[in-house]
Image (cartoon, rainbow, N blue to C red; front, side, top):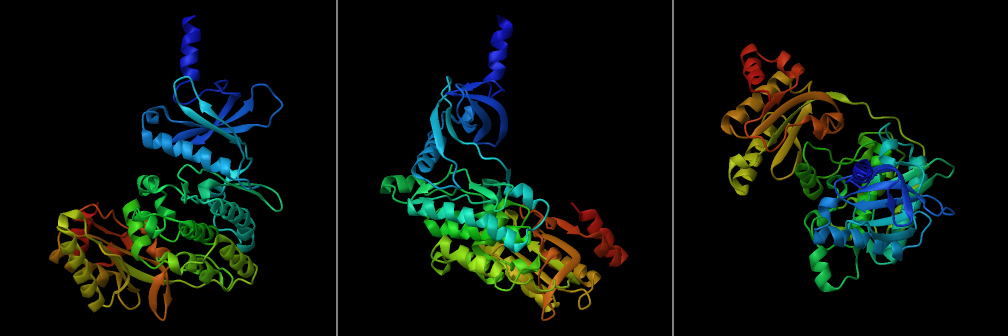
Length: 432
Protein backbone atom coordinates (compact mmCIF):
# COMPACT_ATOMS: atom_id res chain seq x y z
CA UNK A 1 0.00 0.00 0.00
CA UNK A 2 2.78 2.42 0.96
CA UNK A 3 4.65 1.49 -2.20
CA UNK A 4 1.62 2.36 -4.34
CA UNK A 5 1.27 5.72 -2.60
CA UNK A 6 4.94 6.49 -3.18
CA UNK A 7 4.55 5.47 -6.80
CA UNK A 8 1.62 7.86 -7.13
CA UNK A 9 3.66 10.71 -5.68
CA UNK A 10 6.40 10.00 -8.20
CA UNK A 11 3.90 9.69 -11.02
CA UNK A 12 2.28 13.02 -10.26
CA UNK A 13 5.30 14.98 -9.04
CA UNK A 14 6.27 18.29 -10.57
CA UNK A 15 7.48 16.26 -13.56
CA UNK A 16 4.78 13.77 -14.51
CA UNK A 17 5.85 10.18 -14.95
CA UNK A 18 4.95 7.88 -17.84
CA UNK A 19 1.47 6.52 -17.15
CA UNK A 20 0.13 9.63 -15.41
CA UNK A 21 -3.46 10.36 -16.43
CA UNK A 22 -4.19 13.91 -17.55
CA UNK A 23 -7.86 14.24 -18.39
CA UNK A 24 -8.49 11.80 -21.22
CA UNK A 25 -4.77 11.44 -21.91
CA UNK A 26 -2.06 9.12 -20.60
CA UNK A 27 1.49 10.46 -20.48
CA UNK A 28 3.96 8.55 -22.64
CA UNK A 29 7.06 10.72 -22.13
CA UNK A 30 8.21 14.22 -21.31
CA UNK A 31 8.96 16.04 -24.56
CA UNK A 32 10.38 19.28 -23.18
CA UNK A 33 9.66 22.28 -21.04
CA UNK A 34 11.09 25.12 -19.02
CA UNK A 35 10.39 27.37 -16.09
CA UNK A 36 6.75 27.97 -17.07
CA UNK A 37 5.55 24.46 -17.80
CA UNK A 38 6.34 21.04 -19.19
CA UNK A 39 5.19 19.40 -22.40
CA UNK A 40 4.41 15.69 -22.61
CA UNK A 41 3.62 13.36 -25.44
CA UNK A 42 0.43 11.54 -24.46
CA UNK A 43 -1.92 8.97 -25.96
CA UNK A 44 -5.67 8.84 -25.70
CA UNK A 45 -6.83 6.80 -22.71
CA UNK A 46 -9.77 5.47 -24.73
CA UNK A 47 -7.89 4.95 -27.98
CA UNK A 48 -9.08 6.09 -31.36
CA UNK A 49 -7.31 9.45 -31.28
CA UNK A 50 -3.89 10.59 -32.42
CA UNK A 51 -1.28 11.47 -29.83
CA UNK A 52 -1.44 14.85 -28.12
CA UNK A 53 1.07 17.37 -26.81
CA UNK A 54 -0.03 18.04 -23.23
CA UNK A 55 1.35 21.18 -21.61
CA UNK A 56 1.07 21.35 -17.80
CA UNK A 57 1.73 24.44 -15.71
CA UNK A 58 4.48 24.09 -13.12
CA UNK A 59 3.16 23.40 -9.62
CA UNK A 60 5.02 26.39 -8.16
CA UNK A 61 3.08 28.74 -10.47
CA UNK A 62 -0.44 27.56 -9.67
CA UNK A 63 -0.82 30.34 -7.11
CA UNK A 64 0.38 32.99 -9.59
CA UNK A 65 -2.53 34.90 -11.06
CA UNK A 66 -0.31 36.16 -13.87
CA UNK A 67 0.94 32.67 -14.76
CA UNK A 68 -2.60 31.28 -14.77
CA UNK A 69 -3.77 34.15 -16.96
CA UNK A 70 -0.96 33.52 -19.43
CA UNK A 71 -1.66 29.79 -19.49
CA UNK A 72 -5.38 30.30 -20.15
CA UNK A 73 -4.62 32.95 -22.73
CA UNK A 74 -2.62 30.38 -24.69
CA UNK A 75 -5.59 28.04 -24.81
CA UNK A 76 -7.88 30.91 -25.81
CA UNK A 77 -5.50 32.02 -28.55
CA UNK A 78 -5.08 28.55 -30.04
CA UNK A 79 -8.82 27.92 -29.84
CA UNK A 80 -9.43 30.99 -32.01
CA UNK A 81 -7.03 29.87 -34.73
CA UNK A 82 -7.47 27.46 -37.59
CA UNK A 83 -4.36 26.98 -39.72
CA UNK A 84 -2.45 23.91 -40.92
CA UNK A 85 0.75 25.17 -39.26
CA UNK A 86 -0.87 25.73 -35.85
CA UNK A 87 -1.53 22.51 -33.86
CA UNK A 88 -5.26 22.18 -33.05
CA UNK A 89 -6.53 22.57 -29.51
CA UNK A 90 -7.90 19.21 -28.33
CA UNK A 91 -8.64 19.58 -24.65
CA UNK A 92 -8.17 21.71 -21.54
CA UNK A 93 -8.59 20.97 -17.85
CA UNK A 94 -6.83 20.68 -14.49
CA UNK A 95 -5.03 17.96 -12.56
CA UNK A 96 -6.22 16.91 -9.12
CA UNK A 97 -3.80 19.39 -7.51
CA UNK A 98 -5.07 22.33 -9.54
CA UNK A 99 -2.41 22.46 -12.21
CA UNK A 100 -4.06 23.42 -15.50
CA UNK A 101 -3.20 21.68 -18.73
CA UNK A 102 -3.70 22.28 -22.44
CA UNK A 103 -3.71 19.41 -24.94
CA UNK A 104 -2.98 20.16 -28.59
CA UNK A 105 -2.33 18.08 -31.67
CA UNK A 106 1.01 16.27 -31.45
CA UNK A 107 3.42 17.54 -34.08
CA UNK A 108 6.30 15.34 -35.27
CA UNK A 109 9.67 16.88 -35.94
CA UNK A 110 12.39 18.85 -34.22
CA UNK A 111 12.65 22.47 -33.13
CA UNK A 112 14.18 24.71 -35.77
CA UNK A 113 16.77 25.67 -33.15
CA UNK A 114 18.10 22.11 -33.28
CA UNK A 115 18.48 22.30 -37.06
CA UNK A 116 20.28 25.64 -36.84
CA UNK A 117 22.79 24.20 -34.38
CA UNK A 118 24.48 22.71 -37.45
CA UNK A 119 24.81 26.10 -39.13
CA UNK A 120 22.85 28.36 -41.49
CA UNK A 121 20.34 27.00 -43.99
CA UNK A 122 20.41 27.58 -47.73
CA UNK A 123 18.11 30.56 -48.38
CA UNK A 124 15.71 28.48 -50.49
CA UNK A 125 15.37 25.96 -47.64
CA UNK A 126 14.86 28.83 -45.21
CA UNK A 127 12.06 30.13 -47.41
CA UNK A 128 10.37 26.72 -47.47
CA UNK A 129 10.39 26.59 -43.65
CA UNK A 130 9.43 30.24 -43.20
CA UNK A 131 6.38 30.09 -45.49
CA UNK A 132 4.16 28.02 -43.14
CA UNK A 133 5.28 30.16 -40.19
CA UNK A 134 4.29 33.26 -42.16
CA UNK A 135 0.91 31.69 -42.90
CA UNK A 136 0.36 30.87 -39.22
CA UNK A 137 1.27 34.40 -38.15
CA UNK A 138 -0.97 35.91 -40.82
CA UNK A 139 -3.87 33.81 -39.51
CA UNK A 140 -3.11 34.90 -35.96
CA UNK A 141 -2.99 38.56 -36.95
CA UNK A 142 -6.25 38.26 -38.85
CA UNK A 143 -7.78 36.90 -35.63
CA UNK A 144 -6.39 39.83 -33.62
CA UNK A 145 -3.60 37.82 -31.96
CA UNK A 146 0.08 38.81 -31.69
CA UNK A 147 2.34 35.83 -30.92
CA UNK A 148 5.15 37.89 -29.25
CA UNK A 149 7.62 34.97 -29.04
CA UNK A 150 8.48 33.94 -32.59
CA UNK A 151 11.84 32.17 -32.37
CA UNK A 152 13.49 28.94 -33.64
CA UNK A 153 12.62 27.01 -30.47
CA UNK A 154 8.92 27.63 -31.17
CA UNK A 155 9.04 26.37 -34.76
CA UNK A 156 8.77 22.60 -35.24
CA UNK A 157 10.04 21.11 -38.49
CA UNK A 158 9.29 17.59 -39.75
CA UNK A 159 11.04 16.07 -42.75
CA UNK A 160 9.35 16.18 -46.11
CA UNK A 161 9.16 18.20 -49.29
CA UNK A 162 7.86 20.69 -48.60
CA UNK A 163 8.71 20.32 -44.90
CA UNK A 164 5.88 20.07 -42.37
CA UNK A 165 6.17 23.09 -40.12
CA UNK A 166 4.28 24.26 -37.06
CA UNK A 167 4.35 27.44 -34.99
CA UNK A 168 3.79 26.62 -31.32
CA UNK A 169 3.76 28.18 -27.85
CA UNK A 170 1.21 30.97 -27.80
CA UNK A 171 1.84 31.27 -24.06
CA UNK A 172 2.52 35.02 -24.19
CA UNK A 173 0.28 35.77 -27.17
CA UNK A 174 -1.67 39.01 -26.91
CA UNK A 175 -5.19 39.71 -28.09
CA UNK A 176 -5.00 43.05 -29.87
CA UNK A 177 -8.69 43.68 -29.17
CA UNK A 178 -8.33 43.27 -25.38
CA UNK A 179 -10.38 45.69 -23.33
CA UNK A 180 -8.32 48.71 -22.14
CA UNK A 181 -8.02 47.40 -18.57
CA UNK A 182 -6.69 44.10 -19.86
CA UNK A 183 -4.36 45.85 -22.24
CA UNK A 184 -2.80 47.78 -19.37
CA UNK A 185 -2.30 44.58 -17.41
CA UNK A 186 -0.64 42.77 -20.30
CA UNK A 187 1.58 45.55 -21.58
CA UNK A 188 4.43 44.11 -19.54
CA UNK A 189 7.85 43.30 -20.94
CA UNK A 190 7.62 39.67 -22.04
CA UNK A 191 9.41 37.73 -24.75
CA UNK A 192 12.85 36.40 -25.64
CA UNK A 193 15.66 39.02 -25.66
CA UNK A 194 17.25 37.75 -28.89
CA UNK A 195 14.05 38.40 -30.86
CA UNK A 196 12.14 41.16 -29.06
CA UNK A 197 11.12 44.30 -30.93
CA UNK A 198 12.22 47.59 -29.36
CA UNK A 199 8.68 48.54 -28.37
CA UNK A 200 8.28 45.12 -26.72
CA UNK A 201 11.49 45.64 -24.73
CA UNK A 202 10.19 49.02 -23.56
CA UNK A 203 7.00 47.36 -22.32
CA UNK A 204 4.80 49.35 -24.69
CA UNK A 205 1.58 47.99 -26.22
CA UNK A 206 2.40 45.89 -29.28
CA UNK A 207 0.66 44.95 -32.49
CA UNK A 208 1.44 42.69 -35.45
CA UNK A 209 4.54 44.74 -36.29
CA UNK A 210 6.29 43.24 -33.24
CA UNK A 211 5.85 39.82 -34.89
CA UNK A 212 7.19 41.27 -38.17
CA UNK A 213 10.34 42.21 -36.26
CA UNK A 214 10.66 38.75 -34.69
CA UNK A 215 9.96 37.08 -38.05
CA UNK A 216 12.82 39.13 -39.50
CA UNK A 217 15.06 37.85 -36.69
CA UNK A 218 13.92 34.31 -37.52
CA UNK A 219 14.82 34.76 -41.20
CA UNK A 220 18.15 36.25 -40.13
CA UNK A 221 18.99 33.26 -37.92
CA UNK A 222 18.10 30.79 -40.67
CA UNK A 223 20.32 32.35 -43.35
CA UNK A 224 23.13 33.67 -41.11
CA UNK A 225 23.27 30.85 -38.54
CA UNK A 226 23.05 33.30 -35.63
CA UNK A 227 20.79 36.12 -34.40
CA UNK A 228 21.60 39.71 -35.36
CA UNK A 229 22.76 40.61 -31.85
CA UNK A 230 24.87 38.43 -29.56
CA UNK A 231 26.20 39.62 -26.19
CA UNK A 232 27.13 38.19 -22.78
CA UNK A 233 23.91 39.24 -21.05
CA UNK A 234 20.22 39.67 -21.97
CA UNK A 235 20.38 43.34 -20.94
CA UNK A 236 23.18 44.00 -23.41
CA UNK A 237 21.25 42.25 -26.19
CA UNK A 238 18.20 44.36 -25.42
CA UNK A 239 20.30 47.54 -25.57
CA UNK A 240 21.46 46.47 -29.03
CA UNK A 241 17.87 45.92 -30.19
CA UNK A 242 17.01 49.38 -28.89
CA UNK A 243 19.99 51.31 -30.27
CA UNK A 244 22.50 49.41 -32.40
CA UNK A 245 22.19 48.95 -36.17
CA UNK A 246 22.07 45.22 -36.98
CA UNK A 247 24.86 43.89 -39.18
CA UNK A 248 23.56 42.44 -42.45
CA UNK A 249 23.13 38.64 -42.67
CA UNK A 250 25.75 38.68 -45.43
CA UNK A 251 28.32 39.52 -42.76
CA UNK A 252 28.10 35.92 -41.56
CA UNK A 253 27.02 33.88 -44.59
CA UNK A 254 26.88 34.17 -48.36
CA UNK A 255 23.29 35.09 -49.23
CA UNK A 256 21.64 36.09 -52.51
CA UNK A 257 21.36 39.74 -53.42
CA UNK A 258 18.33 41.32 -51.84
CA UNK A 259 18.18 39.13 -48.73
CA UNK A 260 19.92 41.73 -46.59
CA UNK A 261 17.44 44.44 -47.57
CA UNK A 262 14.36 42.29 -46.90
CA UNK A 263 15.55 41.10 -43.51
CA UNK A 264 16.93 44.43 -42.30
CA UNK A 265 13.71 46.24 -43.18
CA UNK A 266 11.92 43.96 -40.71
CA UNK A 267 14.43 45.02 -38.04
CA UNK A 268 13.67 48.73 -38.26
CA UNK A 269 13.61 50.26 -34.77
CA UNK A 270 10.49 52.25 -35.62
CA UNK A 271 7.49 49.96 -36.22
CA UNK A 272 6.18 52.37 -38.86
CA UNK A 273 9.27 51.69 -40.98
CA UNK A 274 8.74 47.90 -41.10
CA UNK A 275 6.78 46.05 -43.78
CA UNK A 276 3.03 46.26 -43.28
CA UNK A 277 2.41 42.53 -42.97
CA UNK A 278 4.05 39.14 -42.60
CA UNK A 279 2.70 38.18 -46.04
CA UNK A 280 4.53 41.14 -47.59
CA UNK A 281 7.78 40.03 -45.94
CA UNK A 282 7.35 36.42 -47.06
CA UNK A 283 6.61 37.39 -50.67
CA UNK A 284 9.72 39.57 -50.79
CA UNK A 285 11.93 36.96 -49.12
CA UNK A 286 10.72 34.16 -51.38
CA UNK A 287 11.53 36.28 -54.42
CA UNK A 288 15.14 36.97 -53.40
CA UNK A 289 15.95 33.67 -51.63
CA UNK A 290 16.29 31.69 -54.85
CA UNK A 291 18.81 34.06 -56.47
CA UNK A 292 22.51 33.25 -56.87
CA UNK A 293 24.66 33.69 -53.77
CA UNK A 294 27.64 36.04 -54.10
CA UNK A 295 31.17 34.96 -53.37
CA UNK A 296 31.86 34.97 -49.63
CA UNK A 297 33.46 38.12 -48.25
CA UNK A 298 37.04 37.65 -47.18
CA UNK A 299 37.80 38.72 -43.60
CA UNK A 300 40.97 40.54 -42.60
CA UNK A 301 42.82 40.47 -39.28
CA UNK A 302 41.54 43.25 -37.04
CA UNK A 303 41.86 44.41 -33.46
CA UNK A 304 38.96 45.64 -31.33
CA UNK A 305 38.52 47.26 -27.93
CA UNK A 306 35.27 46.83 -26.01
CA UNK A 307 34.44 49.29 -23.23
CA UNK A 308 31.32 49.20 -21.07
CA UNK A 309 30.17 51.23 -18.07
CA UNK A 310 28.80 49.12 -15.18
CA UNK A 311 26.69 50.71 -12.42
CA UNK A 312 29.80 51.43 -10.29
CA UNK A 313 30.69 54.29 -12.64
CA UNK A 314 27.82 56.33 -11.20
CA UNK A 315 24.66 57.82 -12.64
CA UNK A 316 23.40 57.00 -16.11
CA UNK A 317 24.64 60.42 -17.27
CA UNK A 318 28.11 59.76 -15.79
CA UNK A 319 28.25 56.37 -17.46
CA UNK A 320 27.17 57.70 -20.85
CA UNK A 321 29.71 60.51 -20.54
CA UNK A 322 32.52 58.08 -19.72
CA UNK A 323 31.67 55.92 -22.72
CA UNK A 324 31.50 58.93 -25.05
CA UNK A 325 34.90 60.15 -23.81
CA UNK A 326 36.40 56.66 -24.13
CA UNK A 327 35.07 56.40 -27.67
CA UNK A 328 36.62 59.77 -28.58
CA UNK A 329 39.96 58.73 -27.11
CA UNK A 330 40.01 55.43 -29.00
CA UNK A 331 38.96 57.17 -32.23
CA UNK A 332 41.85 59.62 -31.84
CA UNK A 333 44.16 56.58 -31.61
CA UNK A 334 42.84 55.18 -34.90
CA UNK A 335 40.27 52.73 -33.47
CA UNK A 336 36.98 53.73 -35.04
CA UNK A 337 33.80 53.14 -32.98
CA UNK A 338 31.85 50.44 -34.81
CA UNK A 339 28.89 50.07 -32.43
CA UNK A 340 27.95 52.40 -29.62
CA UNK A 341 24.76 51.88 -27.62
CA UNK A 342 24.62 54.15 -24.62
CA UNK A 343 26.63 52.31 -22.00
CA UNK A 344 29.15 50.47 -24.15
CA UNK A 345 31.21 50.90 -27.29
CA UNK A 346 33.25 48.67 -29.60
CA UNK A 347 36.08 50.39 -31.50
CA UNK A 348 38.14 48.56 -34.11
CA UNK A 349 40.79 48.88 -36.78
CA UNK A 350 42.65 46.58 -39.17
CA UNK A 351 45.63 45.06 -37.35
CA UNK A 352 47.85 46.33 -40.15
CA UNK A 353 46.92 49.89 -39.14
CA UNK A 354 46.75 49.57 -35.33
CA UNK A 355 48.80 46.73 -33.88
CA UNK A 356 47.43 44.56 -31.05
CA UNK A 357 50.12 45.94 -28.74
CA UNK A 358 49.13 49.52 -29.58
CA UNK A 359 45.45 48.73 -29.08
CA UNK A 360 46.23 47.28 -25.64
CA UNK A 361 48.19 50.40 -24.73
CA UNK A 362 45.29 52.63 -25.77
CA UNK A 363 42.84 50.46 -23.82
CA UNK A 364 45.15 50.64 -20.81
CA UNK A 365 45.13 54.43 -21.01
CA UNK A 366 41.33 54.43 -21.06
CA UNK A 367 41.34 52.17 -18.02
CA UNK A 368 43.76 54.42 -16.19
CA UNK A 369 41.43 57.38 -16.69
CA UNK A 370 38.27 55.45 -15.78
CA UNK A 371 39.29 52.53 -13.49
CA UNK A 372 35.74 51.23 -13.04
CA UNK A 373 35.06 50.72 -16.75
CA UNK A 374 34.99 47.12 -18.05
CA UNK A 375 37.48 46.77 -20.90
CA UNK A 376 38.51 43.93 -23.20
CA UNK A 377 40.84 43.73 -26.18
CA UNK A 378 40.69 41.06 -28.87
CA UNK A 379 42.10 40.25 -32.28
CA UNK A 380 40.41 38.20 -34.95
CA UNK A 381 38.85 38.13 -38.40
CA UNK A 382 36.40 40.84 -39.39
CA UNK A 383 34.98 42.25 -42.59
CA UNK A 384 36.20 45.69 -43.54
CA UNK A 385 34.18 47.98 -45.78
CA UNK A 386 36.41 50.68 -47.21
CA UNK A 387 39.22 49.57 -44.91
CA UNK A 388 37.09 49.98 -41.76
CA UNK A 389 35.93 46.86 -39.84
CA UNK A 390 32.17 46.86 -39.54
CA UNK A 391 31.05 43.29 -38.82
CA UNK A 392 32.16 39.67 -38.65
CA UNK A 393 33.29 37.08 -36.12
CA UNK A 394 35.41 39.55 -34.13
CA UNK A 395 32.25 41.35 -33.07
CA UNK A 396 30.52 38.28 -31.68
CA UNK A 397 29.37 39.54 -28.28
CA UNK A 398 30.05 36.23 -26.54
CA UNK A 399 33.77 37.03 -26.51
CA UNK A 400 33.31 40.28 -24.62
CA UNK A 401 33.10 40.92 -20.87
CA UNK A 402 30.00 41.22 -18.77
CA UNK A 403 28.99 44.89 -18.56
CA UNK A 404 28.09 44.41 -14.89
CA UNK A 405 31.67 43.83 -13.61
CA UNK A 406 33.44 47.05 -12.64
CA UNK A 407 37.16 47.14 -13.37
CA UNK A 408 37.00 44.05 -15.58
CA UNK A 409 40.10 43.70 -17.77
CA UNK A 410 40.56 40.98 -20.37
CA UNK A 411 42.77 40.50 -23.41
CA UNK A 412 43.27 37.70 -25.91
CA UNK A 413 46.51 35.71 -25.49
CA UNK A 414 47.60 36.94 -28.94
CA UNK A 415 47.24 40.52 -27.74
CA UNK A 416 49.25 39.89 -24.58
CA UNK A 417 52.02 38.06 -26.41
CA UNK A 418 52.56 41.08 -28.69
CA UNK A 419 52.60 43.66 -25.88
CA UNK A 420 55.59 44.98 -23.93
CA UNK A 421 56.34 42.70 -20.94
CA UNK A 422 55.30 45.19 -18.25
CA UNK A 423 51.98 46.03 -19.89
CA UNK A 424 51.22 42.38 -20.67
CA UNK A 425 52.05 41.37 -17.12
CA UNK A 426 49.72 43.99 -15.66
CA UNK A 427 46.80 42.86 -17.87
CA UNK A 428 47.47 39.19 -17.10
CA UNK A 429 47.08 40.00 -13.41
CA UNK A 430 43.86 41.89 -14.14
CA UNK A 431 42.31 39.21 -16.36
CA UNK A 432 39.06 37.85 -14.87
